[in-house]
Amino acid sequence: PGDLNRLDVGDQGLDLLGRKVLGDQAETLFRFGEIMRSDVASASGFAVLYEDAQALSAGLDALVETTQALARCGEPARRLANATVYLDAFGHVVIAWMWLRQAIVAASALAAGGGSGLDRSFYDSKLRTCRYFTRYKGDTRWVVAGVDRGWRWYVHEETPGNEFQSDHHLWQC
Image (cartoon, rainbow, N blue to C red; front, side, top):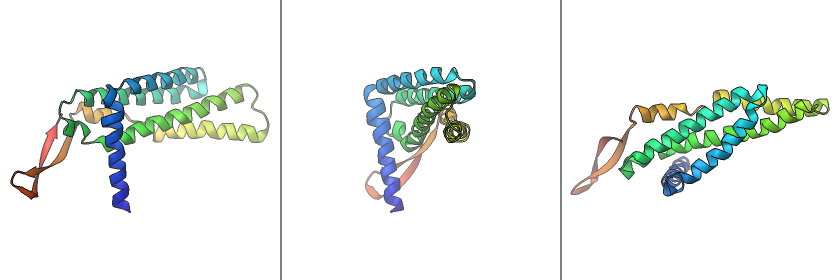
């Protein structure tokens, strides 16, 4: 079961990067990014969310920069070699965005008076969870750092004439 899960995640990464993101030259990603940036602007209006909004903005910038770098890589096998890592980074940016959206609602409610004690606790917990995620889980700048250093990947290639032996070549975009 563990191996099957890894295969499924690998397939999902290949599908996301290879077909869904790069299939339209990342136009859908850029439109999605505009929606996220609109929420970043809304969140920046709340002092309590400013740091979280900036963290999401940096993560989104890293994701876009990474996508552009991978799109420039002319060799499909090299471009897709770390699709699972890309999937992970993409997922972290989206989850950070979802937490920020919830935090905007919470900050708005608290600014309007916040209701009863239980409501205030609920809203405060949304703010704290958003802060935790953006601080400790949502930083995707490491992905761009990898691309900037010219990520190197081991890619499996069959040796001509003998499909049971393989060489691992260090490829670089």
